Amino acid sequence: MMTELKHYNYTHFPFLNYSLDDFQIQFTATVPTAIRRIETRKINGDFSAHAVTVMNNQVPCGFFILDFGSDKYELTTEKNSVLLRSFSINPKFQGNGIGKNTINLLSDFIRKYFPETKLVVLAVNERNVAAISLYEKTGFKFDEKTREGASGMQRIMFKNV
Image 1 (cartoon, rainbow, N blue to C red):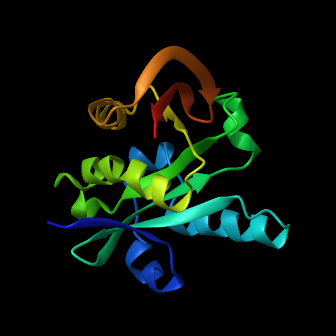
Image 2: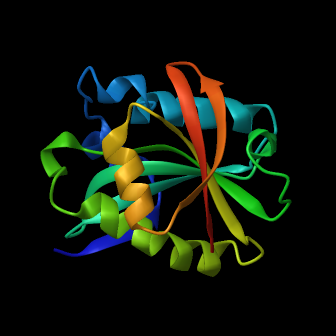
């Protein structure tokens, strides 16, 4: 199994137009919603969010956004940081280590394309135990900071790049 991270391209969309189950959809945006948000920001002159496709054996199977915009300051004061958001793996591919591989590849991807970045931050719902476990196993730390999110309390987690 070969996992790679690539800058999102519209040709990936048919593969990424997957549905999440009723539990997962509480915690992350679908790919179409996330892409619409990025496009709206671009129309308004905001080019600070970058869509990334997760590839498994050269097939798009997951997605996330690296957001360098002002939303990150809700989670950190670090100027050279990025907010990881809208992360999901197509349910057909879940349970095969692709999510873990993705997060393990994240620092190298960021160093290559965004070399000034020193820190990745994210907010994860406290009920999303699988995601918390994934982030902990891949080096994210939780320093007891929380915030109220749309679907309940969120842990603020961070990882040095």
